[in-house]
Image 1 (cartoon, helix red, strand yellow):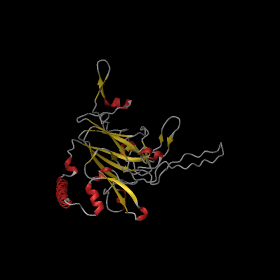
Image 2 (image 1 turned 135 degrees about the horizontal axis):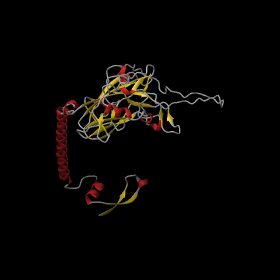
Image 3 (image 1 turned 90 degrees about the vertical axis):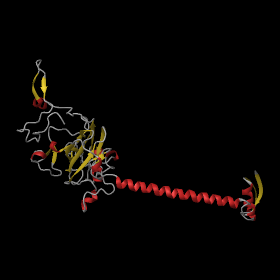
Image 4 (image 1 turned 180 degrees about the vertical axis):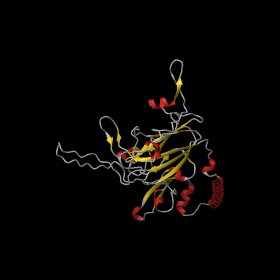
Amino acid sequence: MVFMYMDYSDGLHGLRLSMRKGSWRSFYRMLFRVDPPGDIELQKNRRDRTMKNRTRTILLTAALIGAFIAGVVSVPSAAQAFTCERDVTANLVVIDQPLMYNRIGAANINGMIFALRRDVINTNSLLPLTAGGAAVPGQVELRPDRRPRPLALRIRKGDCLTVHLENLLTPLANPLHPPLDTAVTGVEFNVELDDQPKDRAVGFHAAGMQLVDDINDDGSMVGNNHLAPGASAANGSLIGPGQSRSYKVYAEKEGVFLVTSEGVTIGSDANEGHISNGLFGQVIVEPAGARIYRGQVHEEEMRLATTGTTADGHPVLDYEALYPGVQPWISEGKAGLPVLNM
């Protein structure tokens, strides 16, 4: 139904002829400024229905909140929720490490990596950290027989992995500088190296794996994950140079889980923080009951694991062989460790 009327709502200067489409109730209400007969009872019914709906909403909300609170109270702690089939321990350090990207010469002289503690030596004594070498920030390096590479840890589904991590980075960023040899060109070579981010706090964050003890196992600076009261709490569950802490995660399912340091998440090359400097790796979770062996070995390992030969001359391997407890394996920090299995 279309109604035509004179609109004085804007005064005489705004006088206009308007047409509106609507019910007779809206026209009556507009014309006389009161509700038409019969609408008062209709509005009362609407108010009653609105109040009933609001009451239902309040009761439902209260019930949901009560159920949520009851659920939170009854949920067991993370440590109680997981049953570890095995407890696997990895002793790691974070060190400054030059990285060579290709044979053309592309490199990052101030890279950073995760490394097994037994694969790192003291720069001065050349002793492994597991065989008497002093773990001094900035005075460590990889063993000569080890190449820098992303960290790879392997465990089984259902295992708990405890990572003991020590930060052995230099207190100040970008500690290494190339030699300045300008005798030929006579041109001063003075390039500022700022590949590393300034913040030196690091952590072990395994994305997608379950935290066992508390939020500190997340290896991050998020929420209330304080390492300890005092100044060290400023880093959350991260650690500064010379500090160490442990992280425990549970392998709930098979797969490959990215490991990063959440100490610096932006800046540096490609705006990737610690990741672009080499501080990343992975935890590979194998099927439950899997047996895990090294994918690449040298002649020495094959010789140490060989117990004899077959009739046609092929070696017979002991896949559970250990490094002998004598030199030179003692000074290398390998004595008593598995040769082939992991």
